[in-house]
Length: 181
Image (cartoon, rainbow, N blue to C red; front, side, top):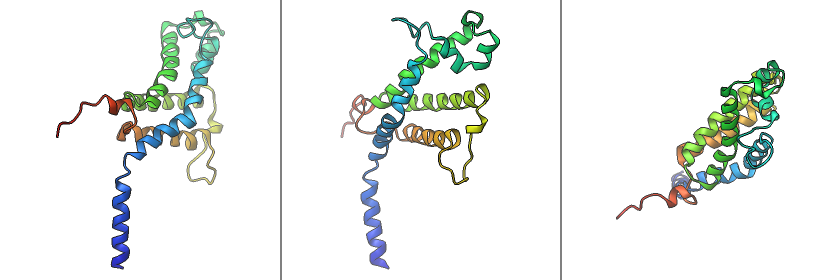
C-alpha cells in the first residue's frame, strides 16, 4: 500500500507541474470550438460597406431585440438610441472579446466579458426568441441541449480563463513585468 501511495504522490507532483497547460488548452479549445462561431455571428450583424459596424444590419436588431424590433414594425429608425448602442456594442464585443481571448491579451477581463455575453445571449434566446424548448436540463441523459449543456461548458471554459489567466503562451505573460531574483 505504501508503494502505491508513494507512486500516486509522485504522479500527482508531476501533474501539478503541468498547471500551465490548463489555461493554454482552454484558450486553444475556445479558438477551436467557439472563435469562428462568434465571428460568423458578428458578421451577420454588420451593415453594408466600410462603416458596417456603426450601421448594423436589420438582422442585428432582429437577433438582439426581436420583440422590440417586431413592435417597431421592423423599422430600425423607430428604435431608440439605446437599442442602437446595445446592437453596436454587442456586435463589437462579438469580434473583440474572442480575439482578445485567443491572443491571450487582457484575458481575464475578456473572459468575464464573454461570460456576460453568453448569459445575455442565452436569455435573449429564451425570452426574446421564445426558445424555451432548447433549454434542456442537466442530469437528463441527453448531453446536447443547446442552452443548459453546451453553454454550461462554454461558461466553464471561460471561468477557467478568469481564474487561471491566459497561460504562458500569451500576450498577458509577455507583457508582465519581469520578476527580479
